[in-house]
Image 1 (cartoon, rainbow, N blue to C red):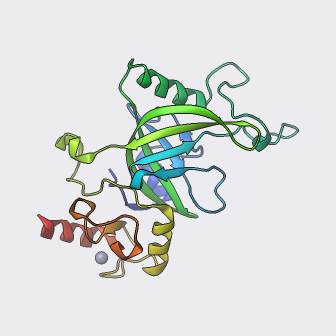
Image 2: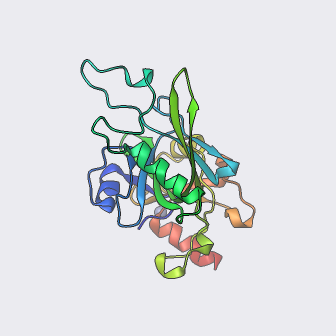
Length: 231
Ligand SMILES: [Zn+2]
């Protein structure tokens, strides 16, 4: 299992999920969780946003598939229902959020992966899907989903391999700058394997997720050494 801030390849991400991840939205991909892929890069196809200092993710729903002789996906409303009458991924996530809002179920649990660069992904953590709505965007309707980062301190310990420090997402722009500054290597040993975005001063001790000076790349070994020292 990955920890928030882990940097992984596309293949590692797919092998962790046991499928070849092709779609951005994957409702109930696992037994009791869903998976979404996001990208906040300048040329990303959807406008996802991180709010409230990294605790809230606003994720945009997805367009109709691009088909020969079909409409331009960005010119029509994002669909709730497939042509055959089943719910689209937008519809599945939307209904789950509404079930939670009216008190009929616990929030759906969603794992969020973020594309940093081609082939390079970060695990952003586990989120609760707490709201969904439709809004106007460039003369059409799009879905928006509100996801709240799960507070790891409240998760029972047996579900985690270790106590996690991170309670905030590191914004994408910061991730990219840190990746470039540290040249995609552990700052201690130069390893390019099992990298992790590390808070130099932990969030819980007042360190910020929002400044590049407080984030560095560490390999798994040096990340582990560091958490031993903090104990
Ligand atoms: Zn290292």
